[in-house]
Image 1 (cartoon, rainbow, N blue to C red):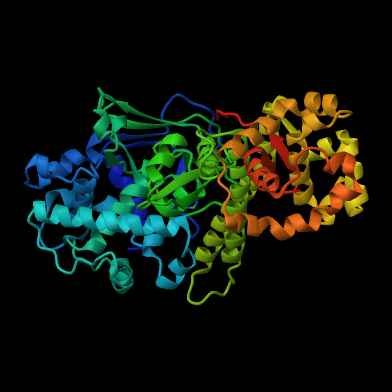
Image 2 (image 1 turned 180 degrees about the vertical axis):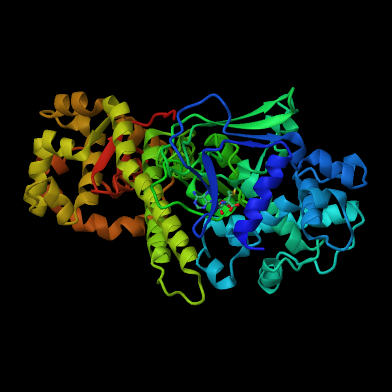
Length: 580
Ligand SMILES: C[S@@+](CC[C@H](N)C(=O)[O-])C[C@H]1O[C@@H](n2cnc3c(N)ncnc32)[C@H](O)[C@@H]1O
């Protein structure tokens, strides 16, 4: 029977069994999206359902329960639809024995597609295109759960199953059995049949809540198959309503938009990201999708994971694998606060008990490095040749589209970081000062750099590579501020709020300087002293300019200065807790 006649037989069956389909609708086969529904005439917004289907046409968990014999408590709890999925495999592929229910549902079973586009059914060459992505990890995880669930079901229901693949062999198993699935020639109790029915459920089932609004929360993932309405394709943001008319026992599809003649009638499967559409439904629309998300998976040091989760107040993020945390990124929320907190934690110094503005800003720079390298990887991966070996052009198109959407999100996250840093700096404007401003304000100091290093302005300082020397010299100058009779007032009043002298004192009283530290700083120190003291005594010969002061100043630098990665500009930040 051709696809068109199967579709007609199905529509007749559904109407003969009490379905009502608005006569202005027409269902057709299309090569791009399978069965598709169009308006033949203009349809205005109506409260009357466009499609109503009686309960007896729905394939529910209740039917599955009647079919199999088992003890209730034994069923797998990881997927409440496991039994209904197995029941669907039985209806569709058990052709050995006659079956009243199968005979009844036959017209519906005949229009369920055997060619599925979800990545679980792709060839190894096609799957290779996704290798190294989070989506590939999810495919592997989902395969493991499905295998576990299927094995558990078979044991509970005492079903003889041959040849269950393992997580390692599942990809080859599917490639070997794919042609048999396409011709409908598989055993109902095979893993291939279960994978098919589970994908049918993922791509076309509706929530049981629709029929039973009072269902317990633990059972909210229960689902059922809803013939006719499941022929409608998906478009995000489409305004639809599904209702169950209890008295008449029928499920209604109400469309709250207008349609012109030849417009497609869409359903809304729930506003989905491209990743969800690809994994669950095997298609990706061309247009830009505001619901797109991407994820950043990070492996954390085993010793730090619990502390990191506590201090960074990580929400119950998806633990992708042992010691891995996963964060969702989207155009709407390019970087969640929890990710900033985690990087703030990772950039925290031992001297910081909590997250500080410095650790958060430092962390945001680290995050920038990681996001940039992820973006580069995505650019490389997305550069797929249109003639990739043995890959379907449609799959290549979808994968490219997926990578593009992922790149857009990572780019949005990268673009967000400088804005975030600006906001933080604004938030602590009263407790921070850039070294550029300091350089401008402390004229005597900047003049001393002109005389000693020939530095004419701040940019020149960075260009000539004297930034670190200048920072250390200035910190030591602040530690000696009481010795500058002329500048004393200026140094005290202008920079006092940063707490540099206090931090210097603090480090000085606790630091233990070893021989190796002295060796490390010796050549640096010798390049500056006694030369500077002799050349500009009014700055570099007041107070203590010994080598130890520079070792202390380096620690102060670590504790109080954030050097912004983007422009190498150092910013002094008073040590203080920052709440995100
Ligand atoms: C609930 S079914 C819809 C009916 C389906 N067209 C059919 O032939 O049976 C969901 C499947 O339809 C296809 N689909 C749904 N919306 C689509 C869209 N906007 N573009 C392309 N394919 C779509 C996908 O293959 C998806 O897995």
